[in-house]
Structure formats: structure tokens, C-alpha cells
Length: 139
Ligand SMILES: CC(C)(COP(=O)(O)OP(=O)(O)OC[C@H]1O[C@@H](n2cnc3c(N)ncnc32)[C@H](O)[C@@H]1OP(=O)(O)O)[C@@H](O)C(=O)NCCC(=O)NCCS
Image (tube, rainbow, N blue to C red; front, side, top):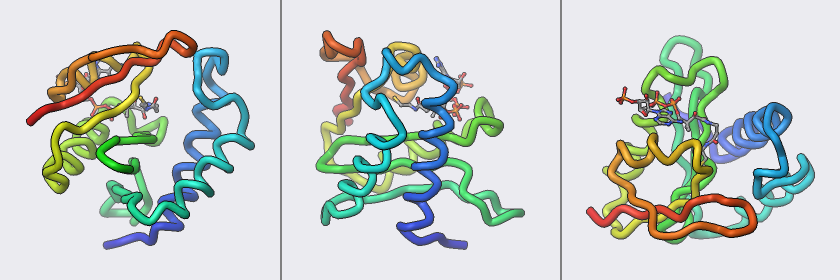
């Protein structure tokens, strides 16, 4: 079962827009649905951007997806009602296994620090404006 890059981008846009509507946007890098859309349009144009997904075997629908750009893992998101079932972990592990490049980086909201630490990432800095953490994994 496979999906196209466009299907992953549609999933990312929809799920991130839903996420933003649930969140306190002052704590986010993205302030509006428009910014999410223009960011994803930009990402789509990046030749070295790669996309990863987990598909529900029964329905064939995407459950979780994320991207990778120049050694940075980005946009990891699991469908709201599928969270806490191990899909996020599975997705990040899939990326780490498939892409051997190290160190790998990501930016995470503090509330997800524990999630990424369990996967082997460590904090090496933070963004004073948004409070998001810079994390990396060496091996
Ligand atoms: C972050 C996210 C991808 C995690 O996905 P998930 O499928 O719910 O997480 P998993 O079920 O795979 O959890 C894996 C492990 O991390 C732990 N974990 C999950 N969220 C956590 C959190 N916020 N803090 C600490 N630990 C966490 C789980 O308990 C689990 O531990 P275990 O392996 O010991 O059982 C998901 O919550 C999400 O999509 N959030 C919204 C989008 C987002 O903000 N993405 C991150 C951008 S930085």
C-alpha cells in the first residue's frame, strides 16, 4: 500500500490545521492556516525534502506523517484519535532507520520533550521567542 507525496501533503495540511485550532497559537511557530499552507507549498518545492507516512492497513488511510529536510525531522503528526498507540514512535524510528545521516535534528514544543527523549534525542538549545526546543540525535 502506498500513497503519493501530494496525499501526504494534504494529510499534513489538514491535521496541522486541526491541531492549530485546538492549540494556543501564541505558543506555536505557525500562527494561521494560511502560514501552514504556504509553508507546505514551499516544502513541496524543495527537491531534497522527503516524506514519510504510516498507513492504516485496513482503510488504506494515512494515520501519521512527517517530513525530513536537510537532516531535520519536521512536521511529525499523528491523527488526533490515533495518538498514544505507538504510531508516532514508529514513524520517527522508521525515519531514523531509513536515513542514516547523523546527527539528525528537530525542533519540538516542550510538551513533547519526553516523547523525543525516549527516541534518543537530546536538547541542545531553545528558541527564546516560541520556547520550542532544539533537539538532536547522534547515533
Ligand atoms: C507528538 C506525537 C507525534 C506523538 O505521537 P503518538 O503516536 O501519540 O506517540 P506514541 O504513542 O508513539 O508514544 C511513544 C512513547 O512516547 C510517550 N509520549 C507520547 N507523548 C508524550 C509526551 N507528550 N511527553 C512524554 N512522553 C510522551 C508515550 O507514552 C510512549 O511511551 P512508551 O514507548 O514508553 O510507551 C503526537 O502527540 C502528535 O501528533 N502531536 C501533535 C503534533 C505535534 O505537535 N507534533 C510534534 C511536533 S514537535
